[in-house]
Length: 301
Ligand SMILES: C[S@@+](CC[C@H](N)C(=O)[O-])C[C@H]1O[C@@H](n2cnc3c(N)ncnc32)[C@H](O)[C@@H]1O
Image (cartoon, rainbow, N blue to C red):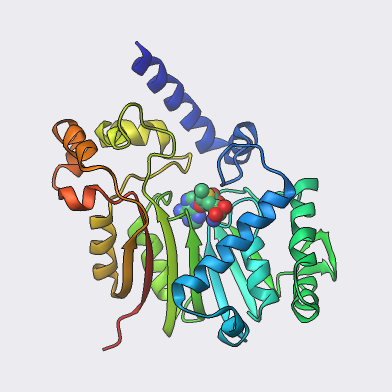
């Protein structure tokens, strides 16, 4: 009974998300960081931590970030409700950041404007001046983003359509939501220059859609999952084995791929007999991956 109600509600709201994505996002209050209450200071701290994580992962010391980013053209998939990491990228030397999203989540609310001001006040003089050039009226976040510095684009496909012009690609908590992962990796590959690098943090958890076992959201048949969620941007459920395959098929050279969280083997054993068809071939080891960091470049022949 509980499952029937859940399916009916999810299928109906999926149609709302399909035909009125902006309204659906407003009704759910989705920010991209979950639905919890946060202060502007917490929002700013979250984006500062995201920015720092990318460079820690890439092995770029804080004192080297300016040199690393200088003049770089950057692409971000799925910035969420605020292109704040893009702002920090420009502040620290990037020439331009293109942000592409499938959903119109960005909002310059009072809280988000306060978060931007918090980020600005944490910058040194040179970085602050660069960050202030990211707004249509220099230094005024409420005027919106200057497309010469931060280009925020919404496309129903979530794809950039760029060709050979990007030096650095990044995303956080996005790839597990994309509706056509091979298309997103193909778009990324096409957008990247020959020596470009891509870095992504991927969260393979259920995003609150499991019940007793963290892996039991993988028991819903694929057709039902799509009927309930395909237009809402909830997890596509692909496991790390699919990422490895798509990366190889697209022509990426994997520099590193490392788990951030592993499921308990007992949970894998418990979920195994009831897994939906697409997950039955996934090895126990791959089934344990609940998140990972990926760094990759283009294969050079
Ligand atoms: C969980 S949020 C993460 C937002 C942000 N990166 C952060 O860390 O707060 C996922 C983001 O991916 C976006 N997204 C979903 N499908 C996408 C697609 N196919 N292409 C690009 N972005 C997509 C969502 O609209 C949202 O902005």
